Length: 530
Image (cartoon, rainbow, N blue to C red; front, side, top):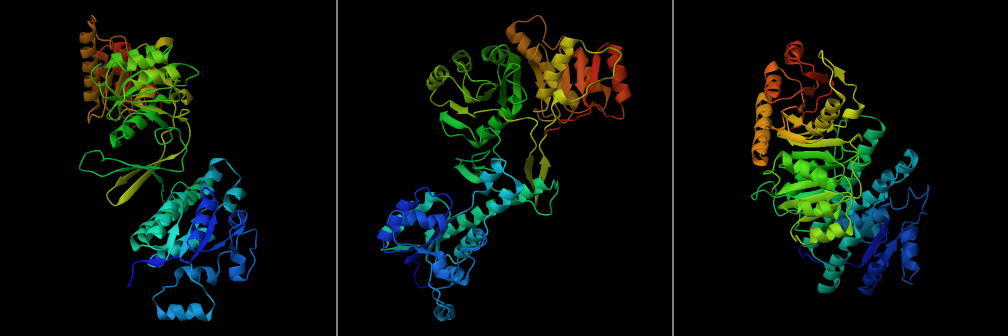
């Protein structure tokens, strides 16, 4: 190219999202740009008195087949793909009456929104855009000459350049918009392919793609030397990606990761049944409790470990009230996430300017299906979400003594929590509150001992005669491969255990439980988390 500036003489506009369309079209016309458009877009432009050529006049073919065919024509794609400085291309354009299109403005049929509202299979298919992605890709490929816009947020950037460059765009802008255009069509196709896989119940499609829309560029990643960004996927699961941030500093990478862990955990506790609070630090719960109200649940959760919550994340399962807000703000907290908050609670939080308050609107469904993904060197691990819920599991008593009603209640509580703690996991619980959590150890015995030691430290600080692990119950995320892990729990004072079972040494473990007179139930469901 001899010149990076390209004058815009003709624009083709075809949009489903008509936000700012009329104003943009009027501004383009003010720069002497000829407008070409389709269907409803053309009607919207013409309705305000602007001159616009319908694409059917350009192609000589009417829009047909319920709008499926309207822009798939050489006079459209030739105008987008022709290299302006190529003599052969120029000759072909002249021979076939093809005029250049210097600006393409297209946003796609709302496929993702159609899927979100649970539309029929046929309606979802009809909302798969064909002509739009074809034009976008053509214009983006020829970005040396053509500018492409895929969302209204970029209208102003085009207008600023036209004003600054006598009706022309720069190569720098065209390249940036081209990159964005390909990312948009990739995310669009990913949404379609994942929907198809879900509809066909294909667990391992030959190709798997994920796409998202930028929520924010982050200051840094897990560590300051790492770059990071946060993206929203088509999945509308309530949580940190969909929540409103009412106040506080911008969320960091670690804030987002920890807040997601906290909110997924709190979702295990039905707000119709009980108030509950989860405190998370480094993606692990350090205190979880149920209570008659949020402040009671918070106090019980905090008592499990009074050191780790400093700088932590708090999640609650009901509308945050002022009393709970006052209790939470007694120490330094990074993030609070809740379905909602009262005006009085918001006023309490507002006194802590840096404290982030997120309102998610509702809780995610712990039983809902979905996918999770993790990168590995040269690959992508994709699995279904762990949506097993202890209330749906038939528990099997395997010891001579069955758990009491109170123990069974605490066992289910502890297993809910263990699902959200990094493996190997041991959770001691008593009276619907965690009293010791052992997370992320290579040895299950070490997890049991660490959790017991944390409980001992909490008892010393609270000046209790003995740690709360005495008379507690224990949950293990996976089976005890040997009796030693169970024996460590018994030594800490546990009276009942819940675990998946399935070890070749289950009989040995059951005998150890019977010898100690404790109750044990098997779930048959493992909750590894790495």
